[in-house]
Image (cartoon, rainbow, N blue to C red; front, side, top):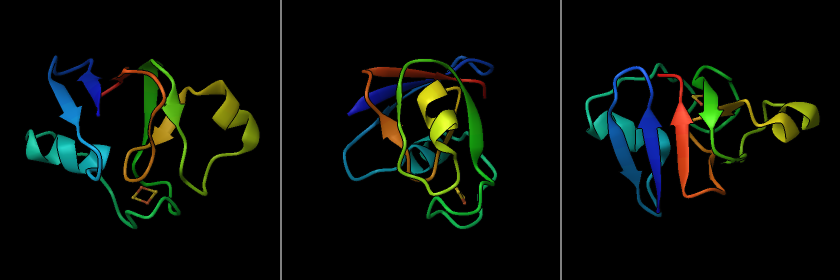
Length: 87
Ligand code: FES
């Protein structure tokens, strides 16, 4: 599992194995607009302020993946213990 900190709302959510960031946020009452929930449409793209995403989407370019400044919350996870998101 890893932690997601929502910088704007100040809420911290733990994302367990088998649960997406999107699902964990939704359970905590933080709505993120989503559509495909399969990492292909780009709707749930969210800016990453701190931490290293583990990209599992089909939207970002290699350069964007390497930069780690944005991620798809429906499928991507974390390599670091904690991500801080701009939500
Ligand atoms: Fe489509 Fe996340 S909802 S990429």
